[in-house]
Image 1 (tube, helix red, strand yellow):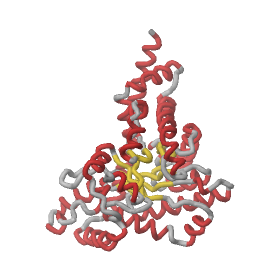
Image 2 (cartoon, helix red, strand yellow; image 1 turned 90 degrees about the vertical axis):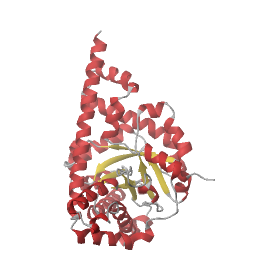
Image 3 (cartoon, helix red, strand yellow; image 1 turned 180 degrees about the horizontal axis):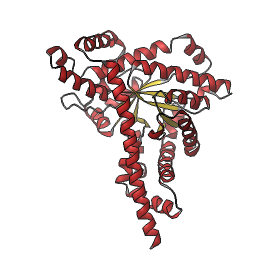
Image 4 (tube, one colour; image 1 turned 30 degrees about the vertical axis):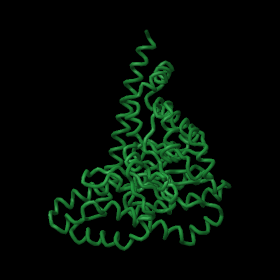
Length: 373
């Protein structure tokens, strides 16, 4: 009998872990998840690193060393996080090679403080890529308005990109266009476009959290009947858009020249509402050529009791459109929902980044004090 995670992989869903820490790397846990849970990549963000460093004895030696060299807070953060990502890339290298560079990817994010600064995002993305210095790294850039031209420039420089914080179909269409423009730019610059990979991270559970809050405020039976439906509908329509955009002439011409599609990635897949099944955003978002990045709790729930029934997206487009018609009919302004979520998403990552800076600053002070003894 195959496991649910094996079944997911067999139908074309790449399972990526939404977590990374030095403890996970050094203990052998990450390698074990590759072997036993079909994990084929890792995503990180400032919240993940803030959590890892706040309880990470594994970082003490490096922090002491950095403190002894007089490293500033941001320099220390980049040294610590790029070391973790580089080591994770090395663990995933066999997966990267076996899948022809499609999987075995590890993502690291530009500073959220730069989310509205195109030029600074481009510069830091190039710096992160150079510092990790592995072919299987993905640089995460948020899908803000300022992020879109940065995505094009960074891909145009021959760097693979994970586009994060996508909530609306309109912004997703712009992200695909930014990716295609980047591939065109890379081709003009003489880069091998067949080695460029990109994923577009479409957030799921946060959509339900925000929409369900608005449905509860509306308070009608019609509104209550739509609870827990918006996140899946939005993601399924994103996949419909993905299929449409990559069937257009601009994309097919690039694909014929060796480019790869920018795969949809389902992010924020931990179920927030205890009334919903804990594997909902996995089992109901199955389609070939997708990535599902899961917190470990969701990964283990899927492995334990996930029921994989094949493609649960492409046959559900009409139903998804109907959900959106019904949301509009009861008074949910979805354009406002997605703008609120984007703004909140950036703010949350900035808050986590500042928390990370504070954690590292405290550790550096302690390291300096120990070095002085």
